[in-house]
Amino acid sequence: MGIKEEIIPIFPESISYKLLDYIDKNTQEIRIKVNKPIIIYKNIGEIILGINISSDDIKYILKRISNYSLYAYEEEIRQGFITLKGGHRIGLAGECVMEKNRIKTIKNISSINIRITKEIIGAGNKVLKGIVENGNVKNTLIVAPPKCGKTTVLRDLTRLISSGNRECKIDGKKVVVIDERSEIGASYLGIPQMDLGIRTDVLDNCLKREGMLIAIRSLSPDVLICDEIGTKEDIDALVTAFNSGVNVVVTVHGSNLKEILDRGEFNYIIKNQIIQRVVLLNNKNGVGTLDKIYEVSKGGEFRCLDI
Amino acid sequence: MLRYIVLTLIFIACSYLGITVGRRYVKRHRDLKEVEKYIISLSNEILYNNTPIPEALIILSTKSNKDFSDLFNDAAKYLISGEEKSIFDSFKKSYEIRKEKFYFSKDDEKILGDFLKAVGSTGIYGQEKIFDLVRANLDINIKDSLEIANKNSKLYSYIGILSGAMIVIFLI
Image (cartoon, rainbow over all chains, first blue to last red; front, side):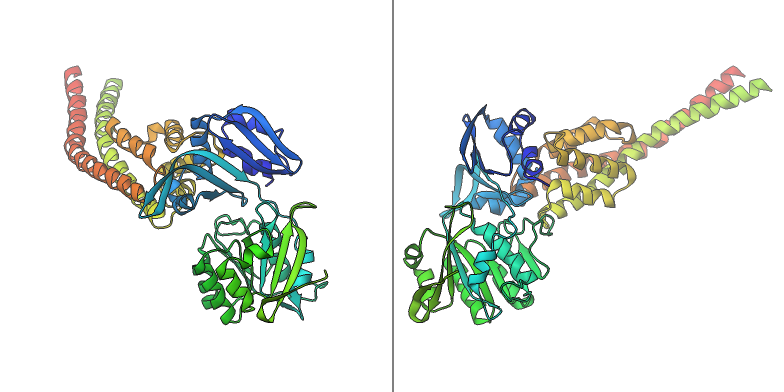
């Protein structure tokens, strides 16, 4: 299925036929707000459409994206997003209902941000060269700001590591993907819709910490793949994986190395050489542009690799 | 000879009519029992497996008898394609096509309609309450339908047979 087939049906008929002309493979985001025009972000810039959205339109879109079943997306809504079939992440904003200092749910949703997922075969080729040594995958942290292709690169790395790659002299490895938001594999009914290679198991919709422990216990992976780690629990699970002899490739939001080192948990795993490679991405030459790959040596010293 | 054939036919027709009308009450009870069974299955899919409604309906359609299976299948189809805007509208459209195959009363339809307007629209806790409510309401109607079926199925059968016999006697 193409982007149009996955995205257009979630809109009411009165809007969907107008959107048909604007959505294509260059579309990155569609932003929708009550009583405001639809804004489409493409790689050439933004397009403001003369279509105003009503609250009924938002309710209809919500019904469609939740498959008429809000209960099935309770946890996701609590976290502020729902993942659509095809792996497209839909961010939600509205009135937060709090309970014991925690968001219980979001009601009266007034903004929806649709981020289009793209599968780019080959996006991870350059990165793979920098993170493989003697046929083994090094523990890697991929750092990039939002919309710079972290997930796209991670997905392609998964495929390359799982299927093996002659150029990088790596045999296929057993890979487990902890896909908390269904963005890496875009699983539908438990089956990944993206190519993740032939030796990949996917724990879809699974909390990272829980998923890492399940994987170590029962799936005997060579490599664990995880998107957007950040909490202390995630890091603890990462350390457990490291201690179990499993290699990890994970991503994190960030603009540069200093920003990551300033965060205590990440400082710990880098200084203790749990992370052996740090990959920096940007979007200067398109999504997923490789900026630098650093090798982490003893004491947390960095050496920029020549790729 | 022809006279006796006509009289026999009148008697059979009246009896058939009476029995058919009586059977409607039995069939209503049977349909309500079936619906109760499907609501329990649906609640299992929703409350324990978190299965979205369209998929849950497809699963239900594989476990149900033909008329209900078609009803669930079509409703799921309308939801997936976006042809209808809500679960209630999808079921309404699917039900209208095959309404004559079911024997629900207006009150049964209202209970199920209210349920279909609310299912899927809240979190799990809300769904539990919605299922509790529909099952409590259905229980009452199932009990009523059984009483009515026991009373009316015999009553209408007798009325049919007796009125057939009366007409035949009158004509002789």
